[in-house]
Length: 79
Image (cartoon, rainbow, N blue to C red):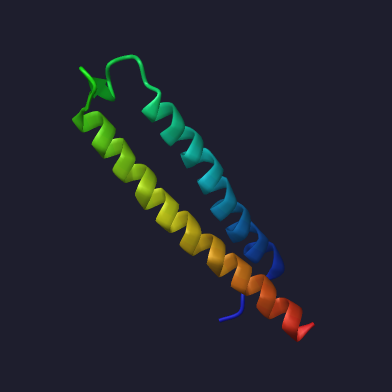
């Protein structure tokens, strides 16, 4: 299957966007002072669930971004 240039760029941008958003989220999660993420210094279930969401999003963002990058490289070779 061959991806078009716009689709490849979209996938690559989505992968980068995913990393930027979720890195910011994890930083804010770690600095949380509201008591949701940490209770008496110990991580709560809220923390673990949201950390898992972030890790899964990192993995999917990476996979999707790599697909976009490979699509762009394939287009460059055929041009």
